[in-house]
Image (spheres, rainbow over the protein chains, first blue to last red):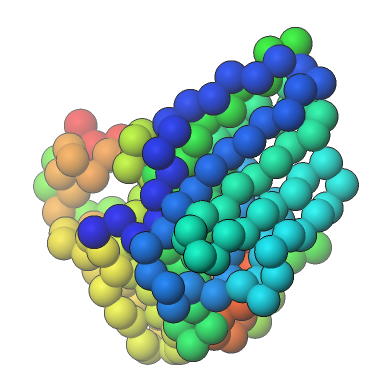
Length: 112
Length: 113
């Protein structure tokens, strides 16, 4: 059973606009969440993370929001750039665990 | 610069062949993982190891085995490759339990004919 879900397989956004990628989870024990970016034929690279004690974390153009009551997190990219075109995975882990749980990914295309 | 290195970027094997995928990390991480990535299915965990000679099954261990004889090295073994094992294989490592980043290698694209 998929404990981390990304229900949008793909998203297209105009350059300069905001990209919003969504992620839902079912396990309330998760207390740390991460976003990864993956280009074709490369390994995923870490983008941004958030602890469950926060509801927002910002790093430059990237902001992650966490809504614990809804078991939902989102990644905002502002402004979107063509180089942001990639597959984005969200992942979750709990503090006493070793295993990361990944969503199925959202393919973002930023149109110049 | 921290690094997870996978031995082969691209491999082509025949059905029934034994396949070894090697992974080395230079960060002294305790945890190492093998995932496969398939379109629409995301990253699925095959096996992970939290210590030398320790291993735990992930979500899809069937048809695979692993070996961790040294802390820095984690090998994935396909005893008898099948066409449904054609995939992108990703090795990763992390330190300690819980909150912490997972570092990935570049990936190994395996095609089984």
